[in-house]
Length: 438
Image (tube, rainbow, N blue to C red; front, side):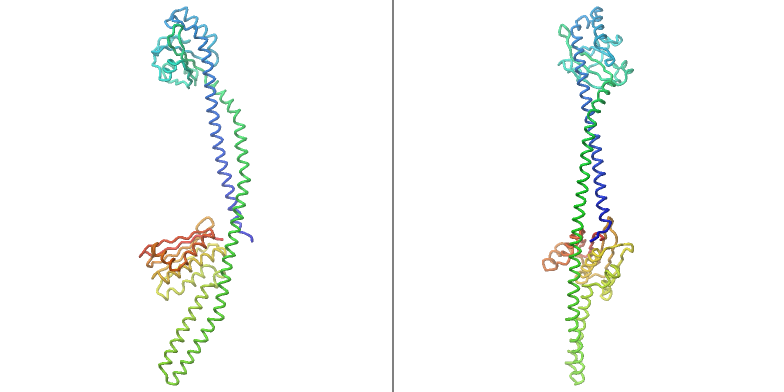
């Protein structure tokens, strides 16, 4: 069986959406991975800077004599010489030595010596525990005013001791562009493996998505074929039963009604008026039964459904209602293109709804509307202003052997559709059925 182009395009759209969503996910993973790699690189760069400053602090340590802290010219000159020859370079641009009160006791910038700025908690901990920390320098702080000319800096501070055991804080400022260069190199090392890994994972998923879409499409095609066979078999069986009824029972009853009418006429001629009246009434009742059976046969096999379309068949379905005092209206979207399966399902749904309305609702107005529901689906809505019902009433109807709506719901769901009923006592009933339009 050849399926409509829509199903193939729907499968392709599903694959395209999968690829797009998967690609977006891969991009996010890649960006997150690169961000993580950069963070790791920054931490590694900080660790490297910490190692450098610890080494510098060991070089400076022996020169941190009491005189260097108190301002002795010889001691400070010796400290200055070592710092300028072994610590300061293209990367390390500033050195400060602080005491526990936040006073700068020495710096390669003499203008800072003697100034006091309170140490923050981390600096205080580093001073007391002789630990080393690194962070991006806050150049807005007044003690960093002279470092603004260097741009972004990384400050590393380490707790040290003077030769007589006084705790001090050795602080060095490193250019961040050197750190950035190291970070970028680490990211460049990580990026190819990350990009290739993510890309390979993405490419591997495409054939999986295509294969899954094909399997889903095959399953949908098999389900549609099965449903069409079920509906076709049902239509054939209803047609066979209708033909049998028409050719046997209906013809026999019609003949019997004619015979009874003739008997009634003969009795009337013989003067047996009373018996003639009874026979005549039975003949009339039999003719009504014949009409009812013919109506039932037509409803079992609506002759105009596939020949003239759903609108004509629904019009025929509702045509008896005005004679029963029920105002009925039908509307079918003119541009609605339905396949035979969808037409049959929607007609059977409307037929079941009208049957229930006629038998139980006591309605004065019925509206049947069919139109598109979007995404290759069609919607039928049957609304009446009858007595309505609650869940208990529906359950009691099923318990009493009225399975019409239950069977309809099951058939619609097997077709990939949905059937809902909105009703309340005294507020009428609305049946909504959505099915694929093919």
